[in-house]
Length: 282
Image 1 (cartoon, rainbow, N blue to C red):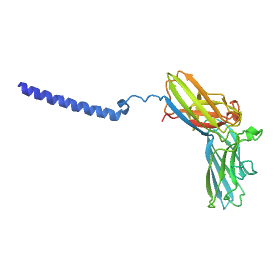
Image 2: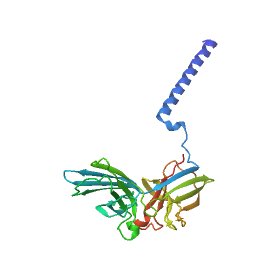
Image 3: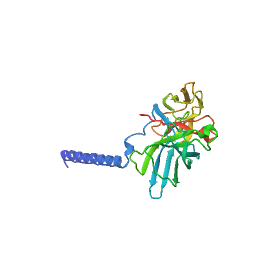
Image 4: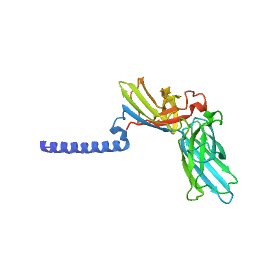
């Protein structure tokens, strides 16, 4: 074989090997996409917007033939395994202490703080009114003393179309601590996590447990970092900054901030989560 022929053969083989290598690389990336890049690192800055907890909705269904009203309440963000009295009241959520129209089944949460409860009310003569009803869920487990009576979720029922099916969101109430809002900024530098909390709308001079938890506001899990106590001033505002050592970064998901009704987490009433916010890094 001549030298030129050998060189041509070598080039052909080299080109074939290069094409084959490229094909194998593309196939491996398609099958194992994670091989194309390293695992995303935790971020150095995070944020949380703190909103009322619990949240959910209520659905009312009226059967005009049997004169029965079916009420289904769905909530997340309750204290785990907790019991909450609930009622249809006359009025609206701006006046939640108006007279009780109908009693509902207790709202009972599971271990994740989620609950779905259905009540069938008989002998409802006129269906769902255009206005004048609200649904209250109380802190519980009873209605006395006052802290247990406190409405923690409320829905104003509006039915201007005279429908037999109506839904409404369950959200903040006018009770102390149950209409608070807040925000938080987190940063990591030199493996030190710094957390700043800003909250308004708390009961004046009240004190609250606060934590960073694993999980999210749909299902808050174990405590990771304790921010307690959070102390409100005479105007119901609270600001606090704390630092924690040995923290590499802030995950994109999987952390949330929870603020509780009091610092006494041994009771359902004190544990009641009043604010929750998922921590994000973007």
